[in-house]
Each structure stands twice: as C-alpha cells, then as structure tokens.
Image (tube, rainbow over all chains, first blue to last red; front, side, top):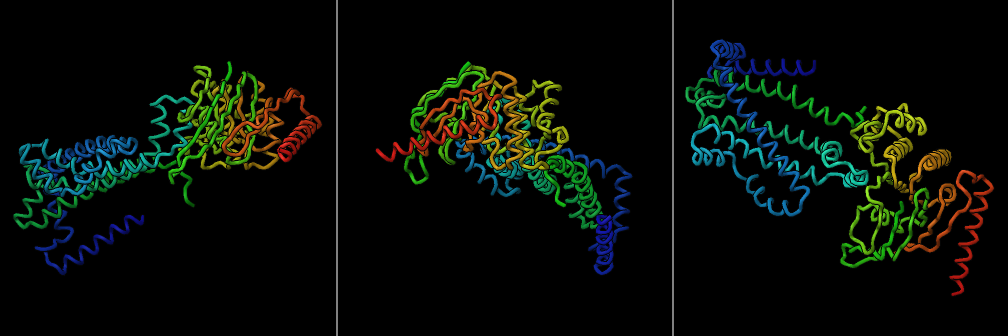
Length: 245
Length: 242
C-alpha cells in the first residue's frame, strides 16, 4: 500500500515537473506511455529488452559463480589471498569504460566481448564480498562438523553455505545493480540491439519520450526482478534469524 | 576398544613472541564403558587437551591412539548448533543414521519433543544444551566427550540433566570423557577422576571410584566427597611441609 502511494507520488512530481519544463525536455507521463505502447505493439520493445536481459543474465551468472568461487578460496586460503590481492585491487579500480573498450578492441564487436566485459566489471565486487564472508566463517562450527565427521559436501551445504548466504545475497543485489548500469554502456558502444542501443539512438535524435520509454520500462523490469527474485532469496536465507518485533 | 592419551607437551606462541607451555606431560587411558572425568580450575588447559584428543589440534608433542573408525559424540561448552537449521535437522545432520524411534526416544528423555521444529535462536541456553546432548547421543558414539555440559545451568536442571547423562551412558558401552570444574558432576558420573593442575597442565591425582554409578545414593556421594576432601587436604599439607 505504502509502495503504491510512493509510486503515485513519483508520478505526480514527474507530471508537475513536465508542466514546467515543457514537452521537449521532460515529456508528461501519458506521452511516454504512448511511446511505450507503440514500441510494445511493434515488438521492438520486447526484442531490445530481451537482448539486454539475456546479456545481464549471462554476465551476472558468470560473474557471480566465478567471483563466489574465487572469493571463497581467497577467504579460506592465505596463499590464494596473497596471490590474488594485487589483481583484485587492479580490477576493482579499473573503470568500466576501459574494460568495455578494451574488450571490444581485443575480441571484436561481438556478443562474447560484451558479456565478458560486463562480467569482468562485476567480478571483483563479488570476490571482495565473498572473501569477507569466507573470512567471517565460524570456526567453532567447522570444528563441530569435523568432530561429528560430517562428509565434506554436507558440511559445506549445511554449515558453510548458510553462513555465506547473506554475503551472496548482498553481492547479488549490489552486483545486479552494477550489471544493469554497465550493460547499457556496453550496448551503447558496440551492440546493434538492446536497451542501451535504443537509448543511444534516442540520444542522437534528442528523442526524450523514446529515451524515457525505454529507460522506465527497463527500470520496471529491474524492480520486478528485485522483488520477485532477489528479495525472496534474501528472506529465505535469513529466515532462521529471530525476527525483530 | 580403548583410548590412549600420551601428550608429552604442548606450547603455543603468544603474539608478543614468547612461548607458553600449556600442557605438561599428560598420560592416561580410558576403557570402553568407563567415564573419565577431568577436573581442574578454569583456564587450566582442559579444552586444549580435549581439542588434541579429538584431533582438532595437531600441533603437540606425543600421541593419541583412538580406535580407528570410532564415532565421536561431543557436547561443546557452548551448544554449537547450526542456527539456520531446526532442532531436529541439527541432530539429523550430525547423525544421519539415527532411526525415527531412537530420535523420538532421545527427544522424550531430554524433553525436547515440543521443540523439534524450532530454530536454536528460539531456545533458552538450557534447551540448546539439551539439543547438543541429543545430537551427541544420536550419533551412537563410541567416544562421548562432554566439555562442561552443565555449566551455567541452575542446580535443579543440572541435576536432572546429570541423571539423564548417567542413564544414557549406562544404556550402551561407550567411553566417556567429561570435563568439568564441578566436583558434584564428577562424583555423580565418574568412574575415574583425574585432577588437573593449573598451567602447564598435568594430572595431579588419579582417583578411581569403586562404587557403581547406579548404586551411588546421597550417602555414598557424601562419603566419596569427604574422601576426596581429605585427600586434597593431605596433598596440601604435604606440599606445605616440602
């Protein structure tokens, strides 16, 4: 209910602002909606949205699985931490744009280059978060598992993984928002489709209604994924915590 | 089956760079069906000794001979339950072979039936301790290790849990190692008492209790305690003279 109210408030502010700014700079909500419907009817909206979502999914899964594994290793094995740390710092501070441009130069304007570039941008934050998680693992529970001779996989699944779950959730959440931002840049620079490409076109034509139509649809999809996937996962991972009154 | 412990020394390096001797030579054996009790002041290195015996700490001099394939049931000082698994899952994860009947029996003895599906965070310390006991017994252990399982519980509850431990220990042949600083627990449960010195830890005295556990009434317990008191006073007198 409160969410709906805040959404209505957002629309109201937008509409009022549109009245002052004029249609060219900030079109009113109905004008944008009209473009949305037209694009949806032609199928272009779904095509571009689908292309972007596919890239996001692939890059996200790649970065999360690789980053989690490396982060866990670095948190657990001192040698891995020492070896990996300089690389990690380099990757963390490398601007997204540099990675994307280099990827396109080295691997050509290909799908693989785009996805790899997005994944590389997300990778270091996943590593850092999971490394913290692995460092914070409760040693007394490890000892318990070892005394009771739990097989490795069972210990990992029931003792280690639940401790990492909040870190995985946090990394997924921040990572998803990072990937959303970077995918558009990657598409703008070197892909013939996707929301980023459309926004680039709209920018060149100074077509604000089209620009807003695409970005807001995109934002809506992000919001839906966040509520339907990320939040339930977080809630499940932390369900054993006694709830605050 | 027997457990042989022969530690010749254990030191650890402090952050300041000095080395501290934690354990002096310690040697004892435990037979199947026996309850050995390690008694000593807090911080005397009992837990260090346990960690070595359990194979969690390999940096010591000496040797530990555990029967190969021996199943270990352990009650840690803190319950060490998995907060994200229910009471029943906690027990089943440690003891995957436990039968439903056995589990129900254990939960009944330990009065945990109502808490099967609760998470450890929802339990009081006393209840969590009982879950830890249930877990240790569900393993059907060959070696049972109890590290101050009754500390910081009120007397009535501690007394009841002590009786439960005695019942469970009597129900199957198992070698039990109980660590405590409570003489009460020691004389109620122990077959042999090992009195430990402050650091570096060594065994000051080994006292067998010959009266079988189930025939120890109030009078017998008092008599054993009196005997022990005399003994320790004798030790002290001896030391004063020398």
